[in-house]
Image (spheres, rainbow, N blue to C red):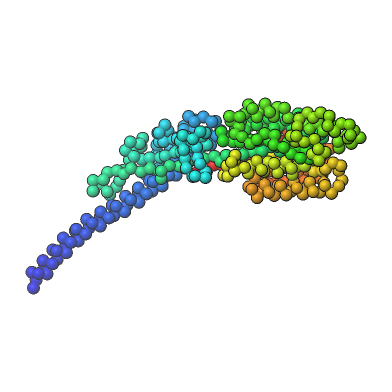
Length: 389
């Protein structure tokens, strides 16, 4: 009876030994798989940080070499499996275009608005593969690890329309207003991004598209040339000169055509809403704009909403149109900055123009036209840059 029992004990010992080997194998697999998963997460975090840093540097300097160096510096501050993360900037940092609607990165896009960073711990990478622990007993010394495909930092296109009051009351300060718009143009050109777009609407009692929305980088000089000719609307005809209505209506000169092909007295007055409406239409054009762009209107005016003659129900209608269009802008996710030139301080003008701000827009006011360029430079820096990873 004792013999068989001793035999069974020996069988159990062999079985336990075999099971221990299997259990050790599973333990090695579980531990090293967790280790590899942690390393991948660390690689992804390093890649995200590198892409963000590279894109920020590229926006500030427009220097791809500087952006690569910045990505390398930030990635190196991270650790993967206990060792410093190391990348090859030439191979692991790629510049290209990000399609927000298609959610895809194109290294061959016609303009650069994105940076892709890959962080690898692989045999051919600068840091080599990740050494394993318990899996060595099975002959597996190391494993290749990388971030989940890549990390992409992308700047949303900024689409901006200036809505400029060129009524006769602005004639003495139109030079400063013109300089202000050129200041904003230069600021966007110097500190913006290749995909940034800019355009202009001018208005009196009606409005016209003065400059179609277009990319700043390739069109900078042509935009500057056009904006250098901005002048006030010389409405030297009725109703500004009612006494001369019959004799001067068709022959009076204009310094610029604010409303192409129109010489009607209905174009007179100050109608911010008309200007906003044209700008909103331009920013909402599905053929010329991007649905995912950050859209902004910069409204510049020196008066309260009014018709000619002043003091009729038309004044309230024009004021209501401005509010209606500002609300329409907000519904279309268009932000509005409002700039009031208020040299004699009209409280109604101040209150009204401030009420038209929307989204991330802000209200600015000054009694000194010479401050307008500085204000628009500040606005240019205030329009946010959206980074998407």
